[in-house]
Length: 212
Image 1 (cartoon, helix red, strand yellow):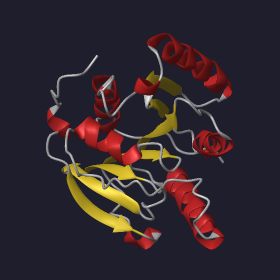
Image 2: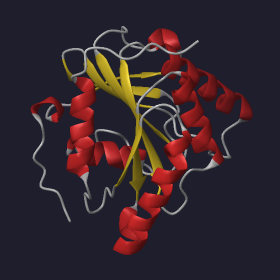
Image 3: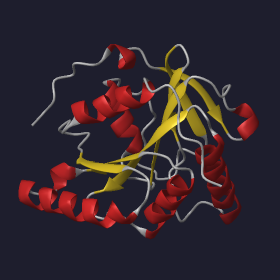
Image 4: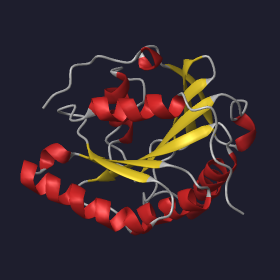
């Protein structure tokens, strides 16, 4: 089913803010943010564009690994969306992969304005080793996660529902809250659900402090 593009007021006027290669380039750590993460070529930029109904807000490319910085988008006032670098792209130099990993882990653990993480997984190849590493970071940061099983239009409805059940079970062992939904940027499957999650998180007053 295709969602009608009825956007909550909070998501109606997103604007590119800054691309940061290092932590000292991040915007001031106040307000509220929700970050998007996932493997390269999982459809992260397309998902951001579909959820905000803004074609071209997040730059898409057929070349995996194009997002090499943390990209911030302003919503209103001190609320932002954050596009984290895609992980798992083999052609990226090892030194850059290590830099990304260290920066992302630091961002997840120390960013007080971060309210939650939208983690994208290809429904045909979910819960990879790298996905689990990302989830371990969110667990250590006591960070709430919402998983989008992208490209759900590539499977039949019954197979997509079975994958949804399987992934939900697999992620049940983590101690931090993790919810899962089907998603397609092509058919706009369940965009409204993802928007509801974003608005709920972005209107929270504070995040939990990371466990030591």
